[in-house]
Length: 249
Image 1: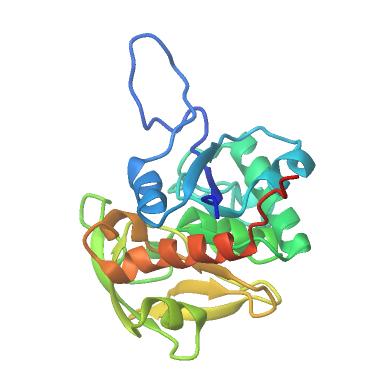
Image 2: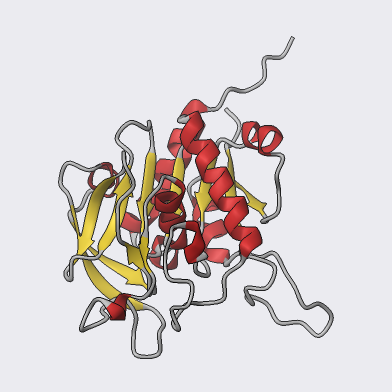
């Protein structure tokens, strides 16, 4: 059987992953996402924001990863657009990913892995809300280091969750870098993991054949941590199982 195609959403054109003297805007994605999909045996295909022909694109994909990135515009969930800690929003990316997430939820077939912003996209697309800035609701921010970058934090996973089944663990050390979090969980979604401060760290959709959303960044440590790579392995395995190769002759 041929390898499955895994769509990976990219950052918005102005999210600043790349610096160049020649161009001001880019559609790009950190390489660990691509590496993790390749290790799992999938073929990564990058999905830049701005696409609206989902009815043509999605059938070509066997699985999808919605990646991390900048904040979602609070207008999308009735939040505080004037919070001073918001990162610059990207309306093109919001529209693109929210539309795609809703189509994937309606379709209810394609395996979907949502990471950090991706978890938030999933929750908002399904009708949930977000906390604009964790330090507004917590005395201590354990989800980023003092420079606002990666922090290793412990996450407790529900024993009866798909994540526990896939990763083989209920206690995880995760690479975290988010300043926002789920507030109201959308109807149908189920909390699958939490941090020590009660912040939601993973969501699942029990009615879906394979959907996992995590607030941490498994791609960062997947090369050295088999439990984190297992998320990508399981996504690709599910995509491969659902893939129908063309009949010859």
